[in-house]
Image 1 (tube, rainbow, N blue to C red):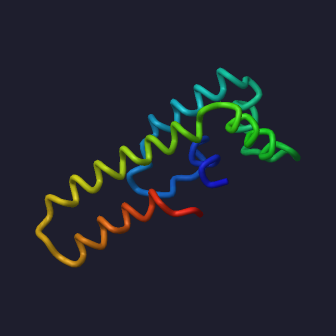
Image 2: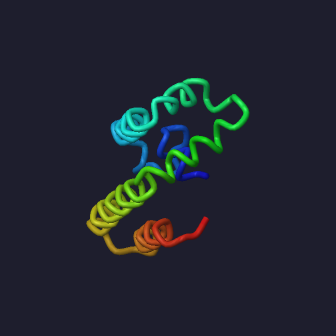
Amino acid sequence: MCALFFLLGLLTPWWWLQDSNVRLTAREILATAFPEMNAMIMRRFSFPGDVDRARQYVLQSDGVQQTTYLAQQYCHEAIREISKLRPSPERDALIQLSEIVLTRDK
């Protein structure tokens, strides 16, 4: 569910995923493929069945795979930048946290 809301720009789970261009692109792709999607986004999924319909649209597209790929790219970039910091337990914790984000189930 979080991946769906992130993809639609309604939830940003991590600081490095707050790129509005990524969310806008995902919205545009989904709205082009599924014209009803834009209306659901604008009304913030307030109608009965909106969330289920949006989930089906995302599953029919390759949106989840694209979002996973983007998350991997952002995490790898974060780790690259964090690795430039002076070695410390805090730096290692940040790197470990970035790796956990990619491998967690929920």
